[in-house]
Image 1: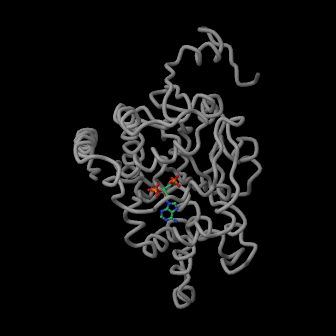
Image 2: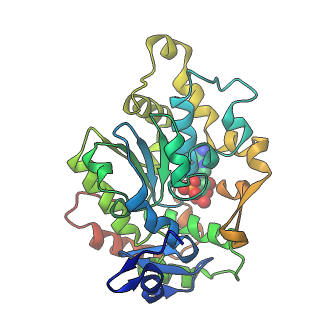
Image 3: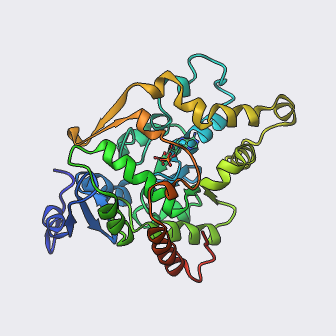
Length: 319
Ligand code: A3P
């Protein structure tokens, strides 16, 4: 196929076959360029670095899984499309389908690279890939990035629930999942490398990379909506401020509001030839900060805290 390139060491397929692969979570994972990817997605994600053609005015929403991707997509989509469609309209795209479908995933769901070429600028795109697997032009062209991360214990618990809902294999126990997460072995992991790559990018390109945390979105979603609008180049006007548009957006995108839309209660998407079925409803679980304590022991919490402290030491990134 086109994906297979000849090289002095053999074909890309040979290379892939030699990469470390592990069972675990809901699907097997393969280590590529120091990042664990779902094995069935490997070819598509390997193609991104060479074949995605970034444009200087692209806006990319980058998240580590279970950090609030769905929420961020909803906010960014609602804000950047508000001159075209009002949230009051019955046929607003966010009322018709899940936010995950409203913003394409680069190289994955709804985001085939050929299709992305056809989108008008400025494009609103999303990815779970670490920065190191995106084309270097993302940085050199000055593409705007919004990175969202989440306190690792909560992110882990959210992921453990999620993986047990989507996979077709047996359930993975909390202890096994925890051990793999702490080894860095989870899709798009190690999580600390992911956080750190985007953190460093936000320090080196401060005006072009917005670094967000799930916890600040929970504590002040209106403030985040305001910050996002300015960052996306479409700040709320005085007239919109008077009408409370930022509040309206934040409230429409709140956990209870999105979860209760028909489009998010029913339906879903099949992925990876049936290996995964994602019910949209499984993207809305609890939406709380600190839920880890209801699932992990105090000792596990301390272990992960120590790991996080060690991995982020000296970076300025603190949880
Ligand atoms: P929990 O499992 O802790 O509830 P992602 O979208 O990256 O897959 O992240 C999913 C997490 O974000 C889940 O966390 C989910 O409940 C939460 N979430 C989804 N929509 C949300 C919203 N509108 N507000 C707050 N949290 C939301």
